[in-house]
Image 1 (cartoon, helix red, strand yellow):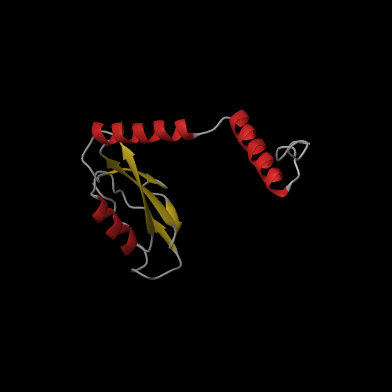
Image 2: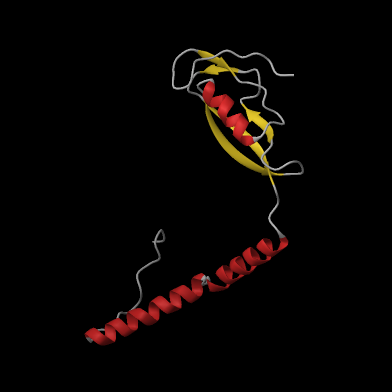
Length: 135
């Protein structure tokens, strides 16, 4: 059962407003009710069982008294990504990790580039400068 909540009309600021009980409501209805009360909804999706786009939790919780214009985080149920999406993302992450250089590989590549640059200028540096953050 919903509690009767009074607040400023849409677009109005100032005063205090009670956060309505929106548990189990759909995302669109939650957004409309919060905006009507002069509150700013911010949605956050949570992967859990239940009907998609259904309000799962509010922060601040229902019944809390807040200033008009305050943000209310509305946690809504999201469906889990499909196994195909997860597999594709895993492949992308694996490729990204493979492309990373170790510090030793990066240092060796840097030294080789300095040597080539020095040869082009006719000067071969004795050693590369220290790594950033190291003396």
